[in-house]
Structures are given as C-alpha cells and as structure tokens.
Image: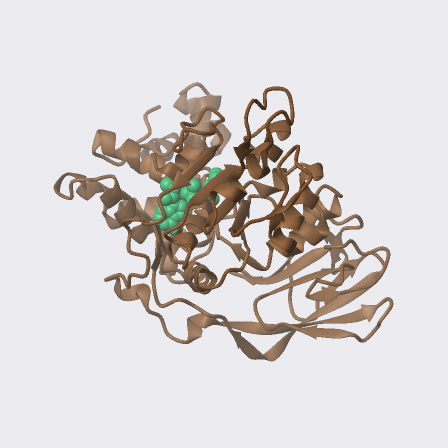
Length: 472
Ligand SMILES: Nc1ncnc2c1ncn2[C@@H]1O[C@H](COP(=O)(O)OP(=O)(O)OP(=O)(O)O)[C@@H](O)[C@H]1O
C-alpha cells in the first residue's frame, strides 16, 4: 500500500510524521522520474487525435435571444452564474445548469442537478446525446447546439506517463498535458473523477514535478476527519482553544510551508470552514483556532473530488466563490471504461509494479486476456484493475472476474480502434455468459427446463454452455 493509499484509509491510518492520525506526508523527492517518454510506439500520435469539432450554442428562445457562444476547447458550462463559459441570465436557469462536452461518443449534455432540468428535443435527460440543430430547454431558455465548420486543437502530451500514472489514450494524454502545465505554475488545481481514476497520484505527481518538490506534500482527507476536528487539523490551534487542546499545534497549512497541501474529498468540507479556506486562497493567510491574529502561509493547494462540485453549488452546499478559487484549473480524470486502449499499458505497468515474473504470468499478457479486460465494467477503475491483477498473481492465472467487475452498468463502450468483428464477438460472448449463468440459476441447473424458457433447443443450449465452460 502506497503512502497515498494509506492517506485514503480510515481515520486509523498510521501517521507518517507521528503528530496527527489524519495527516500524511509524502517525501518531496520521489524515486519515479516524472517526464519519461515511454518505449511504447503508440505513445506518439498524429495531429488528428488532438482536434475536436468546434461547436456553437445560440439562445433560440428567452432573454438575450440570438446571443451566441463558440467553443475554444471541448467543453462549455452553461448557467446563470457569470463565471460560466456561457452565462445565461434568467431566474429559471440554475447557477450551473448543464455542461456540453464533445466526449468519446460525440456531443453530450449533462444536467448538473439543475432545478428545472435539461430537455433535449422534447425529452428530459440527465445525460443526453446531441446532434447539430438540437434544442436544449433550460427553464424558460432554449439553446440551439450546432457544429461549426472548424476544429479546435486540444493540447496533448507527447508522454504516456506522468509520475506513476500511465496511459496513451487521447484522454489521458490530454490530462498529462494539463498536469505538465500545472506543475510549472503555482495554480490551484481541482482534480475530478470517479474513485480509483488516479486523482491522488496526479496530485502527488504535480507536486513532484513542481518547483515545490523538495518541500512537504501533505494530504488531508476532508471526508475522513470529523468536522469538529478538521478546522484544527487544517489551521492548527492555540493552547486552551478547546477542551483537550493542551498545547499549541500547527495545522497542515503551516506544516507544509513552501510545499503543497492536497485536500482530498473537498466536497465534504463543512460549510463553516469554506470561508476560512477561501481566505487562504485569496490572502494566503490562516488563523489558528483560538487565535485573534492571522499569519501568512506559503503553500500551494491541490484538491480532489469524486462529485461534481457545481451540483453542490446548485444545492447550496458549496460556496460558488470557493469553487472558482479551487477550480482555477479543472482536471477531469477519465474513467477506465472510456479508455480501454490504455489497458495493455496499465496491465504491463501494474504487473511490473507488483513484481510479476514474466515467465510465469504469460496468461496475463495474452490478447485474449486483455480483450476480456476491455469488456469488463471496472466501476472502481484502475484501483479495481490493480486488485484484480493481484488476485490473478496469487493463482498465476486469469481468475474469473467478480460479478461487479464483469457487469456493465450501461451499454458497452464502442472502441473504433478495434476491428468490428472482434468487438462484436466480445460483446456477444459477454452477454451469452451472463445470460447462461442467470438462466441456470433460475432453473437450479436443470438444462431441459432452462432450454424451454430460453426458447432454444436443448442440444444448442448444451453446446453454448460447453463453449463458455459453464457447468450446469
Ligand atoms: N493512470 C494510471 N496509471 C497507473 N496507475 C493508476 C492510474 N490511475 C490510477 N492508478 C492506480 O490506481 C490506484 C488508485 O489511484 P488513486 O488513489 O490516485 O485514485 P483516486 O482517484 O484518488 O481514488 P479515490 O477517489 O477513491 O481516492 C493507485 O494504486 C494508483 O497508482
């Protein structure tokens, strides 16, 4: 378990510095070289991969009719707050109403838990696919989505590794490009993404590639610390500030002097602490609990969340001014299911990291094994993949994926870089395996009955079961 993983563990995590059970310091100088061009041929791609269709949003109905916004990247946030990409002033539009993004499956809109919802071409959606000419109703306002003739260029890194993170997909190299830029500047970065997508590792890597690398990197998990202790953890306290404060103690912002503070699960920061953190970001000063005076601090702040903080702002649980101070640079780490092309590289990297013997783990490197991994759901993302590979190493073979790993939550991802026939076969195989297992379970292994329900010949059912290695 890495120091970072420990920091995510429950409150009983061991304390690296021995002063607090909530705090973890990671040495500034890591062993891992940060900017490595890997010997993977596919790490470098052509110009095409870094372009995305430009799009336009135009107010088709409501105040400011005719107002238009054209994309410069791949995303547009829409809402009544003036700091949205496209600010639409109307009382029926939420502060952060929705986000339009050119994703792996084309243009999509996502409702950010707005009050009045998003209606695309007459249908209310939480996430919906758009086409040129789609009409989006947000409260009283209607926006029209159109593609423009030009493309936008998105910066992509030439590297397929940043710190301990690897990935050659366009999505990951887009992230690496942002991280490389973030490392060179002292900006606050908000890392977003599902669990296990590498947010903590990204924070560490940014710190280690920054001029602050020789100073401390301190992590506080805002979700793991009881609210009444968090203030003192962050800002420290004076002797006698509260019952049990037997001596004066520095908080992380003082301790990390010259370095970086990483606030994990920032969405859990209690409302009463939000203005205090805002003050740190605006004035670079803190006040210990029980003190009357502010003192300057020299830290860089990185934060992470698995939630969309804009939805938290809409719900009144997170201050919008704090959100904007945190999200000077927003970095969305993509889930594993959206970048199956990264699997070979991830598997290699993780197996090496786990010290797998090449000779004895050939079964975990075959195209067939990788193809099976591509079609799993990975709700826990790379962390789950790593856990699965650890299980395989114990048995030195490709063990069955658990139900949760194997089960997809939505339609299978389409990967146009794979041949049609291969991909279709894997989708069908996956469906057949799950269908057959459920069918046999329903009929307690009685094949004759199962065949009647399935509406197929018993011999055919036997053949299918044999093909998938399933015993009735
Ligand atoms: N792109 C990647 N390349 C290699 N390893 C990765 C990658 N992404 C994640 N990992 C590994 O997956 C595990 C989880 O990563 P990490 O703790 O950074 O995720 P997280 O997004 O912070 O998760 P959570 O939100 O649950 O805290 C770690 O072991 C990390 O090294």
